[in-house]
Length: 197
Image 1 (cartoon, one colour):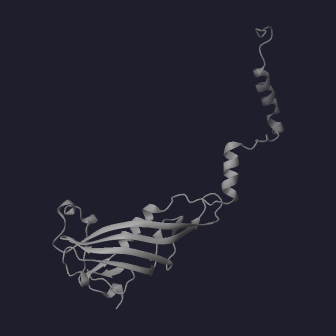
Image 2: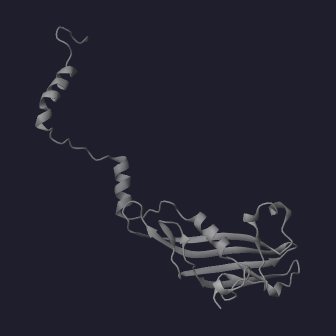
Image 3: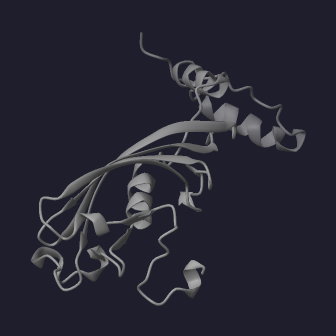
């Protein structure tokens, strides 16, 4: 059964970033760790850089039952690929983000987020939690909005900042010659005046 065919509110237990919390038993203080490598979901990034779909995401997580739900915390690691904003060569960036997300048990939403539905993520039927939205939020915030390479274009840029290249003047259009001569003569001091020494 595909994720689209599941009843509303149900998660696919086989999806890479869907985790089972069943063994925590809703007993506050119960905890387990999880290390897993999963394929990255689609569109994990921004227009200029992102983690390619299907590439490895390393999860190093702790899942802990608390009064309100399940607290998932830990790190997610991967490699982002994009383009240098100066020379458009490929840029790769290691990504390591810290994750901390509370998944509330249905009917046990914490008071501080009760009025803001956008912040509430719940434990789904089957004692499952979907980590993908939390991973997406954390990774996107960590990515550089203007990725740059360490190659020649960066060196050229640094040289250009410290020593601007001389700008050569193009020869004037002969049709403007009369106007230019008037402008040049207006720069000369009026006749009969001398510069004070």
